[in-house]
Image 1 (cartoon, helix red, strand yellow):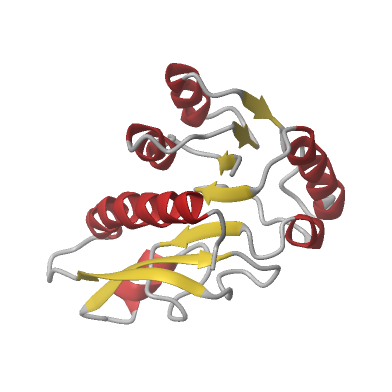
Image 2 (cartoon, rainbow, N blue to C red; image 1 turned 90 degrees about the vertical axis):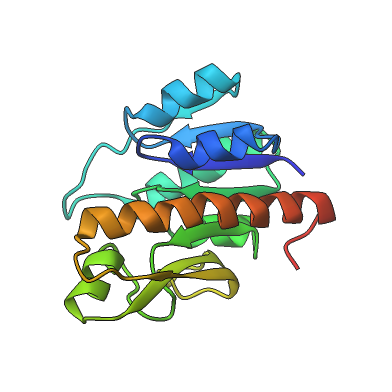
Length: 187
């Protein structure tokens, strides 16, 4: 399988994927970010498909169509979002049905959306965690592939809890991707 990793941040998930020996065909970023440096260090081609607007005028469908074109150009079979900050339109899910993966810092279906860690703390939960799921057009609503719990400490902040969740995330996401690549299919 040919894997593309979509990233927007520091590249820690990408780094973990590469360090585990998982073959990455392409990295796509939507802005200048640390993931570009990780891709270069790991010898993985990287394309920047820059998001030009973060306002109401953002053309989500147009951006998604451009991304689908980039992925098709590299003959990508599996897409792993790794801290990718842009919500994608339907075209990517149509082009890669059931083969777009994501990770979320909560035990879905609880606390979907961008602020999962803060929401878990605000609700006073004692346990949260990480979920690896198939991404769908509805954010954080796709079938769950893997989950692992993380205990919330009494003195946790959003930052301290998120760091512990990221440790779990890097392990279970990489394992899930590697298993899919080995099987040659998501299911």
